Image (cartoon, rainbow, N blue to C red; front, side, top):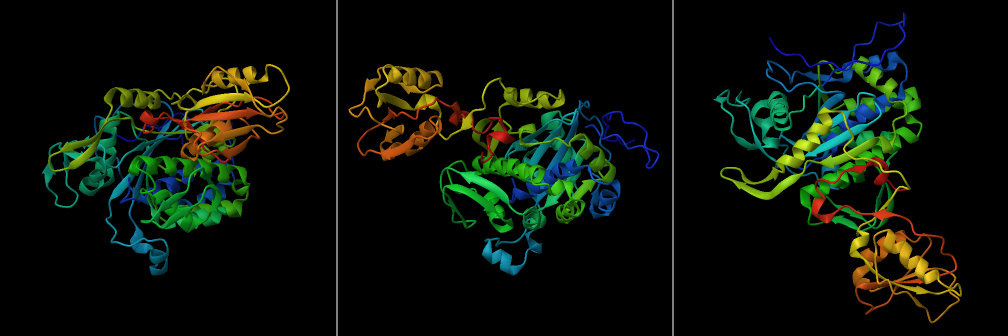
Length: 487
């Protein structure tokens, strides 16, 4: 007998005679196109409106159905909370010729999947943990029947995104469960054709960047600053993989930033409290979604009621830890091999319904490009206040900066505004240091060298905490939604 997806117990509610008792929620990278998973997450997030049952029920027919759990046996033990597998498939054959040219969407659709994410919704519905599984991850399939040839295969090595082509949703779920030991409760498969429309219905999404983002392949061209991206530009942003040397891993980080910004837009704009707007957004999302038979209107409504207070700080994002880049396998080429111990700890947290990161007490750190420990600083006191240079030096050192611990007095002791002087070759370090000194002025001094100089002015009020991802751990670092926003 097929093993049905296990449903997690829903919070107790008073009986509502006007409707039947709600069904308890179930237990539980793209041919370069990451936005399908972004769009799919919005299906879950947009349910947080808690609007009328009739509106959501009317949308139930918008789901195309798929049975990814058919004949599945020996599945992982169900944990707590709900695990949704988001799979993005290529659907550019539905894009208009004009859009293809404008947003550089050439090429034939591959009808494959290259975006795979596990979204874990905590049992108390207070947290969403999103784990990206890189498309080139080395994987071993369970025995299965090839969906194209009909041939029976034993388990064999593949790149994880090839599981869909060989065995469709069923083999994709089975392979993910085999690798993670996380039981998948629901399956959402998203075609990226609805992405631009969804973003436009939301009124655009705000994205910030400290560095210029330019990708000749997608046409992305964003100068430093804050940008309100509409559908087409948002599509370019989440597709781009040639803006830096991080390739797919860097692209996944941008996808996670976009998802956090999407949550912020959806939960702070009032859209979710407007039934008609909610309907329009959800229809746009459902235009290219396939879901398992157990995920429907009642699940959306129950989840939405439990997540009314969901916000960016409720979300956290990470990528499965990579132990070996460029792991070459005969017949597969270069793959990414997971770090077995770190990955096991990560997925154990999902099974045990624990946060992936722990928020420590104290002020929230501002995200910067360069970690304080990599920045060397000389402090000069530009005021007549005795001892101020020593205080600033100590405060910067306490926040992790490599100060000389030998502050001096500046030639000018009438400085009004604190200055961060820097050699242009160390501009990113200067911006990170300036972020720790609110209101400070950046000033280029050619030939200054690697040691930045802080001239303390009369406006100094304190040093703000800043943090950056460890460059050696970028692929496995956990960030919360409120840490990657524009604020």
